[in-house]
Length: 97
Image (tube, rainbow, N blue to C red):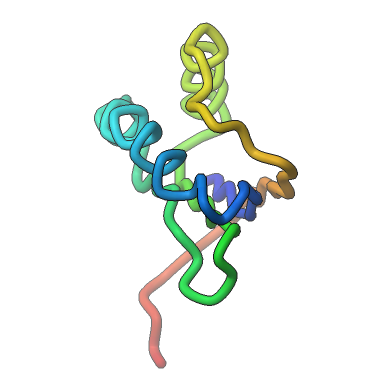
């Protein structure tokens, strides 16, 4: 399993438009084979921050997604900066709190 997580920044006054532009892409990604979760959402504390979280069954599923999305135009306005990390997970289980 792979987790892709991070943050990006847009001008605070442009964040709602940025997220609206990403809605269709999120729906498409969630319908792709191997996608377990995919969300791009407004951060509740920082006005210009956008949080990214994706969970994929395998590296191959993520690679296929990235190949498809490379041909898509990016939403406008664009991100000013981005910090995304990929984690490869060897095992997982329920949260025991």
